[in-house]
Length: 408
Image (cartoon, rainbow, N blue to C red; front, side, top):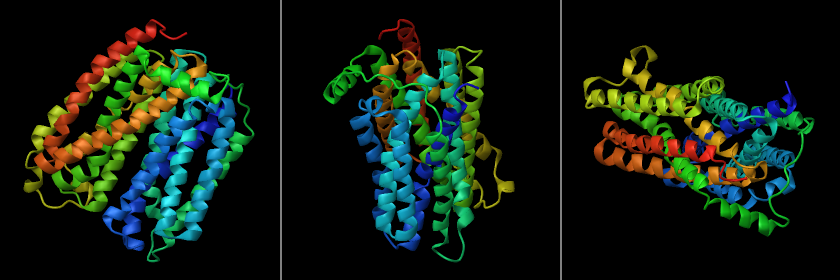
């Protein structure tokens, strides 16, 4: 297989960062328990993770081709390795802030580089879509693993959980070595002759019709995905009456189904038109919500607290399986737009993807949370049908515009 070393390296990068990014909820819980901070104080860790991702993506996206994707990823791995190390030896709430700051900065560099390198390592739109789907699927496996990896290090010693970072440092070191000795075929020429010109050209992307429609589509999808993923544990607890542990474990089914769905999509896109695949997936996802939610009104009042997997009602398994069908949408959207642009624009376009995805996730999670509190969980999830419907419209527009090759 061509460029196998480079491909393994970026898969490993994504896998490690999936674990680190998804650990924020776990670390928040441990911070409250071990470092005796309040819930509001612990919640700041989300900002230490998300804000650097958006800020770094905006600042360096246009500059990255000039610096080099391989150098950027190696730098990111060094930064996050130091972040994990200082967490082990620092062992304080301040050091958790530093940890997620390093994770946010590093992930921005890695995601920008990976999205840009996919265009270099593939030769066709179908190959691009297949690799994008499989990489995002591998990312979801890392997210699911975090639900089990961290608890595996828990013991009566309240500091034993920190030992997980030794393992993560090992993963980071392996990824670094694979990347260090991997040969990247070539570097893409920067889009301008100076950093200022790079930034100006990147800003111009935002007025291109294809890019504008895609930004809205990415925003809508992440609104759906994060609306479900963020609130599913709470949904499980409030609606199904699962206990705290089972609520999190059942939520891991969503991450696993997302992973499986993206791997399957990576295979199907070689034979099925991506638009047809996305539209079918959106329709089925909406159908699952419309079938399940009416049956959950008052469900928590009927049954007592559930602590065993054997007692989980069948609806509890079906809802997280929606991940199988929403899974292909995001990577296929990203691949279609990126493969329609010159490779010199892949890095700045990836920056826009990351920034507006972050906005969509934040706003979607916030809206669902507000509705959850005011009208109940089952009714709150009905809101997600709105962005699903709009997404179909914008997907059809993206397909039409991408065929016209609006950017040369």
